[in-house]
Image 1 (tube, helix red, strand yellow):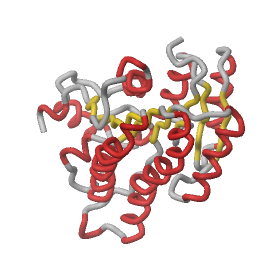
Image 2: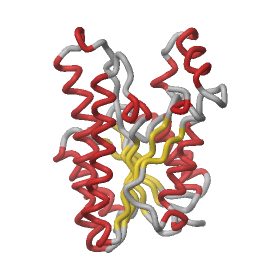
Image 3: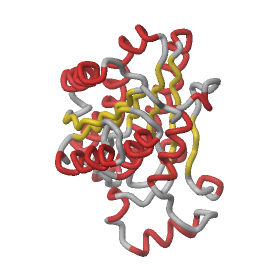
Image 4: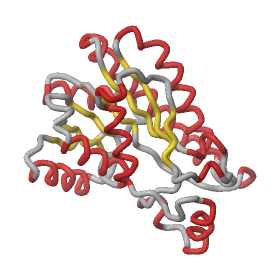
Length: 249
């Protein structure tokens, strides 16, 4: 198992890409902390699925936009498993609207969770990773952060910010053996996209050379690559997982 004895903390891991990532890293041998904000039952189901396959995992509730809650989350990870090797910043929300109609609270909520939440988690894990002189931080951004998207100015701004954060932090911590990279998924079949009407989904598919949405497991495969020794000479990079979508935008 390529991640044997390593400990992974995955935010927003009760469903979608986070859930797929938790299962994938556990299958690779990692001990997993399944973070959630509100979906406690779903998070416990992920933990049960991991344990049923012989893995080790715990569920841990915390709102990543609250720095004190994040510090407690990291401490709980250390108390349970004694170390922290991999952080996957996956937690995120959407509050879509055209700019002229966007409410101030919806702008603030998305920035606070999707960008400040990533910063909070990164800052909180640096001390234990510094002591270990190793670590992997993997941030989930989006192709929207690269290209923009009408009606998602808050989401796009936050995800673009995550890219800048990733590159800046990678420069700061490389000498300590900590690698920081990002993944930019395209149109992925998750709860976040399930509510879109069929016309919108068909329109997205027209722009994707592979002619289908991605699956959460296909993003999780790339997370595993970045978490493993196969990526040991990579830092500050953004890997796009979009079926070719950005080729046509």
